Length: 247
Image (tube, rainbow, N blue to C red; front, side, top):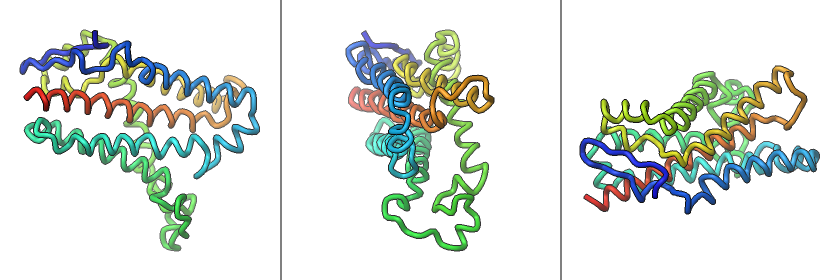
């Protein structure tokens, strides 16, 4: 049995499409394994964590910040031209937004190739960028804190509240049935929980409520943010392919 199902006015069901217990190795196992690996690596080998896991451009976490959203971008591209999507402008718009969001994050995380090809930042841009890099997120609140805040709301609402609350989920699908396909299944909850927990750890450490349980937990938090994006696009793409095949 699938982790969750939804019924729309056009009789769309995701039974057998959404990830179920047989696939728990990725939607449940990967977030837990990543969290354990991050915490245990810092606990057992803090110097290795700082030297190999954290560094900008080549640290393991930083590399994941490029790979995870880029996979999400490719997944969105793979379904945006499906007839089921093209016949529904709202769905096509949503997939396009998700694709652009994933591409933006992947591009920004590698400074649009600067950390790969090592070009010099033009002087005029270096004066605008707080870290003299070829990216936007170091130039303005609107390119960094705002997108991150929107993603946090998406994780709390779309990754926790909607999947866990049948009443809220039904209220949305009954009033806006076209949204049903966009509401994540319960399988999105584990990675959302990890994202929230690491965000809380980041906040309490910055306010000195606890000692340093993890060096720069904000970096680990971003890993789970982007894992959420990748998981969501995969789950959405599966639904789209199933509906496209059925129609």
